[in-house]
Length: 349
Image 1 (cartoon, rainbow, N blue to C red):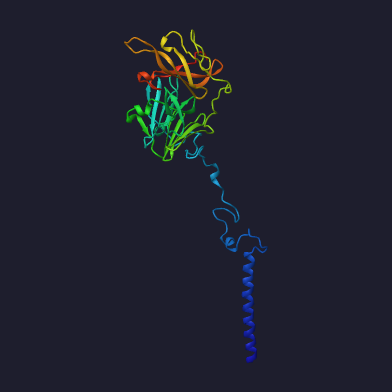
Image 2: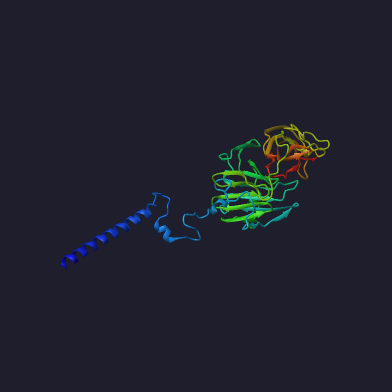
C-alpha cells in the first residue's frame, strides 16, 4: 500500500514537470511565429487587439504628407500659395491716387512698403536695413559714382524683382510710427494680393496671384517662386528678346532702343538726359549716368547737371520686351533714388 502511494506521487510529479515543459515550449513557439518569421505579431500584441480603430499589423496614416512646406529654408510654410486665413489687413493711406501700407518687424531691421501699382508707382519694396552697406551678402552696385550694397527687393506686376541698392529712404522710414504696422512674430498680414508672415527667423513676403516671393532675415535674403494661389506668373511672350527702354513718344529720342545714349520725351527740356553711360542693363533694373536739366521753382534752369537715370519695371511696350518706367535724379543736388517718382516710359502699348 505504501509502495502504491509512493508510485502515485512520482507519476504526479513527472506529469507536472511535463506540463510545465509543454507550456514553455508553446510560449516559445508563439514568440517565434511558428515559422521563425520576425514580422509575425507577438502574443502580447495579439492580446492588445485593435488600437484606435487599426487592425493588428496596420500603420497609422501619415497626415504630414499634405502639410504646407517652406519654399526656401527658414521661410513661412505655405508661402507662395494662398493667403492664410489668419492674415490681418494692414492699415492703409491714400495719396496721389494710390493706396499705401507700411510694415516693420519688431527688431526694426526689416521693413516693407506696399502700394497700388499705377503709371507712377510700383507695388512696393521690402529690404533688410543691416544689408545697406558694401558688405551686403546680396552684392554691390554703382550708384551715382558710389558703391552701394544691394538690400531692397522691389515689387511690380505681382512679382519680386532682383535686389538693388539705394541711396534714399523708404516709406516705412519716413512715416510716423502710428501709420506703420508692427509685424508681431507669429502673425500674418496682407495688402491687396501681397502677404507678409513675420516670424523670429525672418519675414516672408509673397504674392498670392503668382507665388513670387522673398524671405528676408539678418543672415540672408532669398527670392522664390511658389505654386501661386490664384494664377500663374505673368510672363512676356518676348522673354528671350533683348530689352529696350519703353517705346518712342512723339518727337522723342532714345526710347524703344537698347542702352540709348540720349533720352528725350519731347517738349519739356527737363525730360532730356544726354551722354548716358549705362553701368547695368538687362536685369530687373538698369542704371546709367549722364547730364540733364535741373529745374527748381522760382530759379533759372541749370543745364548739363550730372544726372542718374534708372530704367525699371520690365514689361512689354509696342510688342517688345521693355523697361516701362524711367527715373531721373541729380545726386549733386542732394537727390537720391526715390526722390522723384518714376515716369512712364511706355508711350505706345
